Image (tube, rainbow, N blue to C red; front, top):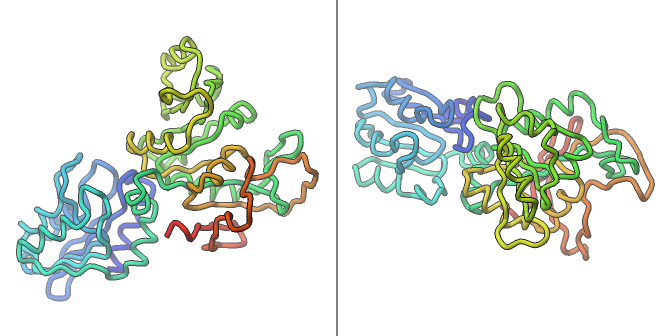
Length: 354
């Protein structure tokens, strides 16, 4: 199973919105076939491993870090192919919580007379596919808040200067973390102030939507985000806006997603449901302060990646990392635990999401 996890990890950042999966076929103590899921839409790990094993799969044991699927997507389901291959035993680390699977793959294999064991190295397997697994259970994208901050918790100066708070190594690591998600999001304030591109690392070869929370549809048609839509999609979430401006943005390739019957700000819960409906399973929110604070106040946070710099800004007018009204009582704060490399950054997970 450790070999399965090692193989699966090779697909991180490329299989989104699918999970990363590795598979090893063993017969008489020898590996006769192994593979991993390389990219969304490509062959699943079990299919590729069985193809390499060929006739040697009959009577073998198949190890996989996630329950074989039973639904038709861009590729055929895996569980029937595993049953047809004649394997004697299947060892899976985790059951797949996706509503289209959720034990059905295991049941199919057992009906075929295959001995199935579930739960081997499940903690390690969960950590590897945490974004996919949490999203499947919550039926909304897994949400990571990312911010670069000073030691006194500031995102920018009173004049809104923020480039660059962190070091080049921290920024490289932040881009690596961005690559592990299905997309990235910012508020319109960040777009107007910084004119970012929000591009993924060059290694990403899959669609990577850049999402803007823009209630009043203020995004400039000449912004760098809009100008780069031919290569990377831009989705704008709006509550209201000028119909003429919307048509202009759509002509430039922007996808405008307008909340029905909304008079004020975009509802975060509606936005996450809509992004889920469009296939997004994980989202990294990178600012600004008000958007980060709004997600925190709504208790929609699964993880927070906080990159700290050895700086002190001070002053009540410097921009805090988490804006908005904040928790009214200490009891309302999110409890978190660190899973960190402290010399570089701290990655915290709210325990109430476990």
